Amino acid sequence: MLAKKLAVLAAAVAVSAPAFADNGNHYGHRHFKHRPVVHHVVHRPVVQHYYYRPAPRPVVVYHQPAPVYHYSSANNGAALLVGAVIGAAIVHSVTMGY
Image (cartoon, helix red, strand yellow):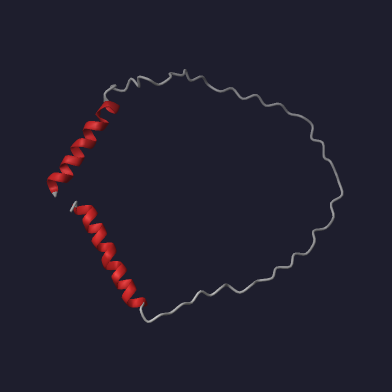
């Protein structure tokens, strides 16, 4: 098990090695010269527009009861147990490679 994890780790390092091989030169990327940004502020007179706006209408909210989904059967516990066992078997077979 440990050998498999080490093999996966070694493969990941080998695949990612070209990403670190440029020694910080960032080949393949565009180089931009950074220039300081100059902000110009222009003061303009403020013009206020007055307009008629009617008063807001009252809002009436009707709360509906939440739907209740209820279904009970005598086999619910057994079905839950069988589903958990089948799910555990699937996960075990996938992780162990059987």
